[in-house]
Image (cartoon, rainbow, N blue to C red; front, side, top):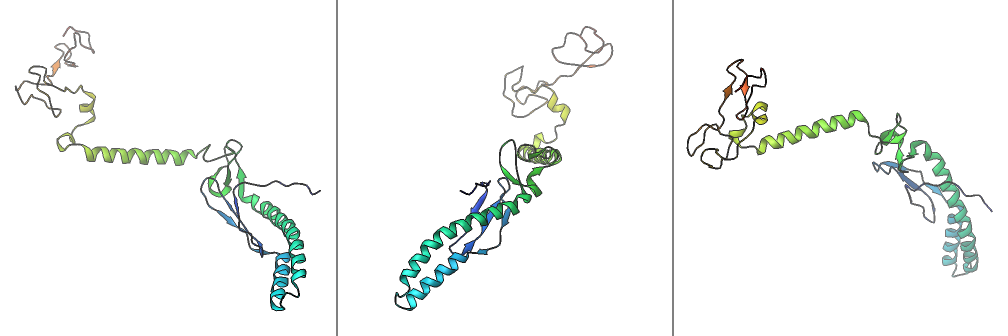
Length: 214
């Protein structure tokens, strides 16, 4: 009884009665390699016998049947041998990740430093660059959606408390206005410490810089 041999999952069998060919591909990126076509000797013999049988009116039909049965067993053995050879030759280009068990190509999808596929251990430089690009795209879209009257706002404007309605008359505010469009009262009164001049929040009781009572 012949011994079994190791096989991989990331392949397609393109073999026919006439010969053997396989494609091996990366589970991550989908790229891969196709082996050269290897003719099958038993397939060639069986084809010749079938052709002879048709040419001579069935004289060789019994021989063709026998050839088919011999071909079937011989073809299977040759098929196994061709597959084993293909796996052995292609292994240098693929590696199996010990974490997720995926078969990936060494060229593009294997992190040599981590000993894992790049799905489990991505390249940090690539991820950082992608994160920066994603953040830039988000900022572009956010700015594009912003109303024209709000595009002048600086970071300090965003850090300040934005009032949704006028505290004096209750009128709803559509923008981050400085004065109420309904009653005209100041919406963002600026108070300063009489001792050190530091800016005070509207509800501050003491100066955050010197402690003087507001």
